[in-house]
View 1: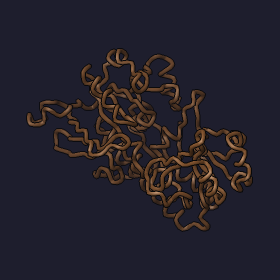
View 2 (view 1 turned 120 degrees about the vertical axis):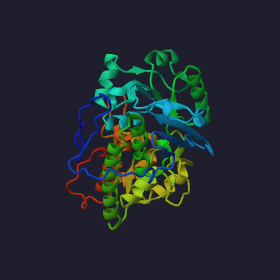
View 3 (view 1 turned 45 degrees about the vertical axis):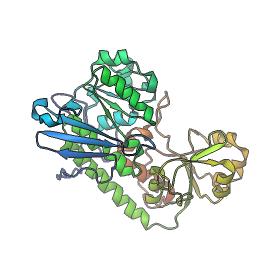
View 4 (view 1 turned 30 degrees about the vertical axis):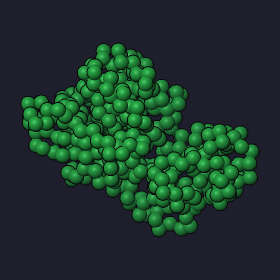
Length: 378
């Protein structure tokens, strides 16, 4: 897999990991954590690190999980002995989200992955091949995790996530089995760079923070350069997003990840006035009343063609945005099993996602840009 401005290194896994670098890499490694991410904090204590993960599932409030990371538990003061300890660098991991797979892969540490969840939905071809060969085991999903398989894999850590609080029962089960597990909440970040910044969280477990900082600094710089360019572009198109499920349209909130991308790409999101950072359920009629003003429609669910959209509701054929063919979906890179790289490597490369959207909204600004994740539906 090759992306613009990023040379893909081999997936060597020796004492540590070989990170991926680009030709324009900055020599400044950067030392600060969480410039954008709100879901984790790092307290460096010399020989060990205290890592806190904050509110890692939807609607969670005042929930904090704390972990100690170090080469040797002897380095940790006895006063902190009740905090879950992870020996680093980790060499055998289970990743329960495709996003986690992408971040570990970007760090050059894909060889450490011994288990995944929902392997059929992974886009990364090398990971998929290792799943087919049996080198990586699919350990199931959610409450259906195969705990016997997990125990056999003997991971150093499981990267865990949950949509609701009942994921704590999985954590408790893993703890009873003596399997170290840590929460990840990158999917809850509302800023695209906040999601991408979680690569620095993962790097703590592999002890390659400097490489992850260099990578993130490049992405940060590229993203903000593009956003500054798009902020001056006129006219700003009105943008519709999503697709209804049965009779409900789960519209991205005005403070959501999707809304921020639209704004930074120089678009006016039709629901920008909404104050939610999560999807808001709306009835189809109320959406339709606004949709008639859309100039561009992006991210229409699983639609692979315009006919897929029209099959849902014949009234869509009356929308100007449909009549003009200004509908773009983020499924240009999909696997046979249904994996979508937008939700995989796209989380790590929001600069490329933003470039795609600028190309959609203001094609003259990035005439040389080639779509990576987006395509125009026909």
